[in-house]
Image 1 (spheres, rainbow, N blue to C red):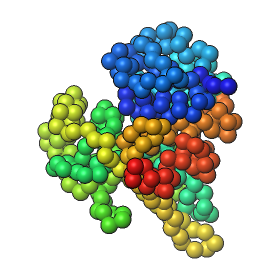
Image 2 (cartoon, helix red, strand yellow):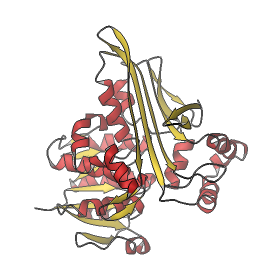
Image 3 (cartoon, rainbow, N blue to C red):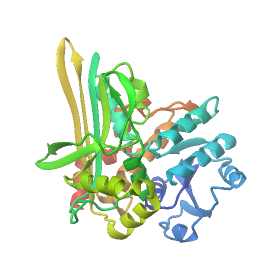
Length: 368
């Protein structure tokens, strides 16, 4: 029996989520957006229907959600809280992709006493990265450090920023500007975005990484007091951070986000030829020895559900669809606030959507 689900946001990620769910035959998907133009771009599929919906109209959203199994928010981060409020009133499960710390705190408050599950941050980072980091951390008796690194990068960088737009411009700017959480000497503190640059190599390619907001998700609170050092940094090719810092600080575009967004969207081309790099390192003690465990993976663009998708579409959509599947299977709590770190990595990777993160599958997609 198919389950009814609503995806709010008909952009690239929302469209990918809808198609991946519809292709299984187990989900009937309604994609809601206030833009008729965006809805018209949706993939034609018998299990996908579009719905014109104004997210700012609370009553309209609540009525649209009633009777469904879940709502998945692929809307801009500043609208996600409204969807969570409507989900609470309608009594449906709620999942989102937000990296916004304030929104996640709001979702946690809404989940208190709820009769349905509230599962924020189901994407790549936060999301999959938290599941991986928690799995590695569980292998130690005593933790020392947890370092989480993720980047969605062009396979063929060709400009001074060594970057192409691959996902939400608003989300990108938010990550570059808002304060970041980190655990330093055992204490959870706020650190500035775009700082603490480092370099590392993976498969012979040199990358830089620096602080950005939101990537730790709820894992920072979960591990506070149990780890000495914990941080999240975004991966880019060398040279990116210096130019972005000049734009944000010297040109004061951190206080003119509309101008920065206009620059990005009119000067940085989008690309479907991207690669997602995931690099997590955990150090600690086990059996009296100081040891390190590392997870490293690259996921490439390719064909999923019969359609060519970018790597960031695949990884983000696979994250939230896998969590939805696990919820439907009864493998996750059915009410209240559910953290990403409560999801077992083996369960996620064994899921039909989670398998998108399998390196062998990624190589096949790349070849295709």
